[in-house]
Image (cartoon, rainbow, N blue to C red):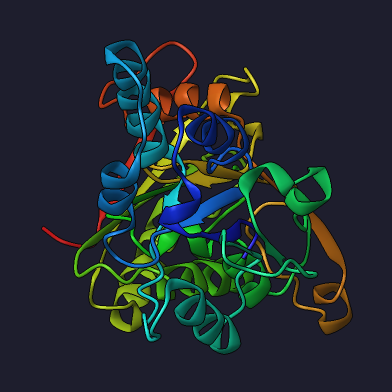
Length: 294
């Protein structure tokens, strides 16, 4: 997945300065996340914080709120070990963490002793992914696994295009919640007839994961270019897909790389407002809409 997963021992987060490092360097918009390892990681951090006065407590509360909303990820890892470090290394052997931070650790290539030891090189993430459907979907794993609502926008995505539907299906397979709503926004321009597209959507539902409810919107942006962007987002953040969500038919073309990048926070907030709005406005008119569940 694009987002880097850092395992940070609760014992390594003691001060307001430690919280400041996490707030400034981690987040879905920054491509780096803090693993909730163990499950009660956030509670343990709160219990261990060493704050000197009421002003520090108020600052810590605000930082903790932002960290909880924007920087944590839970991959339901097994916690198995006599110490936090042993449990983290055991989990790392099953599925790699990007970095492990623990005050009792001996530093090496992927383990750091304190948060201050992290530098810019520790936060370099991959932005190039092959155009095959599995690769395009895997990039978004961190956003999808705990999502209850996914919004995807791409002017060229079409239910009659096999490549588009292959990518869409792979994205849905990373949605692990029992009920997930998928909202798709596509440009109405240069598409087959709506009846043809709607018939394909009916067929797609038959093979779609049972936990997914699909909502499809065909949009006219009145030539404003508003629908030119391609990306997806959840309640946590988003990704920008440079070439959109279409897997080429040609196998060799699938092996070529495309750019995928974290969606900046300002763009995420603007797109959330645009695509979550239930009303049309001047440069965004819904022409057709369809839902898989009545």
